[in-house]
Length: 286
Length: 287
View (cartoon, each protein chain N blue to C red):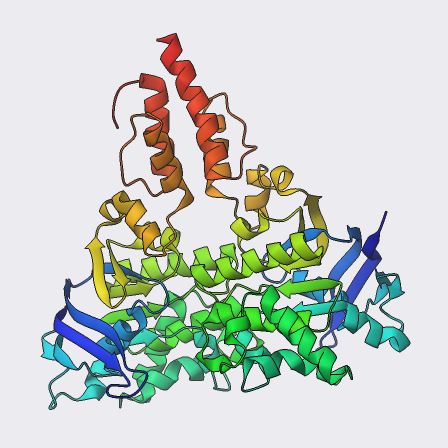
């Protein structure tokens, strides 16, 4: 679905603040895959998602989205933006319409669809993100923070993109609001077969949802693997300034102290299962 | 006992202008905070915790009940100036708190408005920037700083008023893990070294764990008020309030529920590993 070949990007090229943000990136993301994208500030992850949506163009290299080369001059960027939906950070600040329904309709109505289709898509998207019907006629500014964010996500979904990119969708939400948004994203991914790229600072959130995790560091692809394999390298993750889940640290520490526990544990349930097994059977490795 | 903050039956009602409906945001909150304490306030969105924070420097005043800060009644309008000087507030978004084009000008903004002399402003700005480890950025432009650095400048701006209490409303919500660490370390240092009274509202349990005392607000009422080691082991209660507990605490709790001889009075990786290791050693010696 997405393929990057030798992609590099430099900010303010030739200027005094020139900074190489991405250095020769190669990667492939399959159709319907759920990818978590992690890296500390300045790692290049924001640059990467802006490239995927065509907001910026690479210095060199090729980016293929669903068979189209978006770095080709003849490619219409309009089509790419409809194919790749980007939900930016704090998207609720971008709401502007009188009613929730109008706000969600803004994207699809710019696609040249007829009114019935726009309305149908907007209502469908609202339902997907779990916004009750009675909210659709309200002003988006009267909603709670979590609801506003869902309106913003619905606005992107209503364009029926093939790839959905979310930049820190849970920032600033409380634990209950965070779990709700993450659950909805997972649900949409499964029901619509969407390819999802979730950018997050939270290892816990990403590990719970993603098929594969892409770890960026200083403009380079540091790791791109399943959560289990990623968390086998907890020392390296800490070294490059990322937070490893507390359970991973506990299991790693216990293994150092001699308990027979496997590597790459990253959920509480998995940790519980392993420790229980070790405690009840002694030697057996789980 | 030196209580720098005291509230007595604090209630706050909010009336919607359009519908005329009155909502009770804070209900009968009575508490005392000692000078030099580090308090974390937890609660889900809409629990009333930010409303509570706004009562501490008279941005809001009680509908009924009282709030005293440093012995001053916050509803006494004549003393508003004294209260604002005593309590510095730091908010979520560092970009909304920057007013100048150069870091040191930004920090000087508050003392300038307090009518402090020029040489005293110089001293305060230097001290405040040193306190947040930002001295070397004094002549930088705020918009070129990272989120964590900006938020530290915002804290320096508050420190330049030389307050006795600093109230932070989700100061790390918009920061990455490095930025969050910077802020928490700064706040802890101010508390320990300068004996600053700190009230910090947060969603992050790993930050609340650092406090002397955790106050959990739910539906406008105080649900819990105790040191972290007494609050977080109540895993089921915390979950029912829509809050998290550290994974270390939850893991110990779940092992206990699964019939192992372990209590959930742990907060850190080391403490949790110690307790599980004890179980493991028992299993090994019994074999």
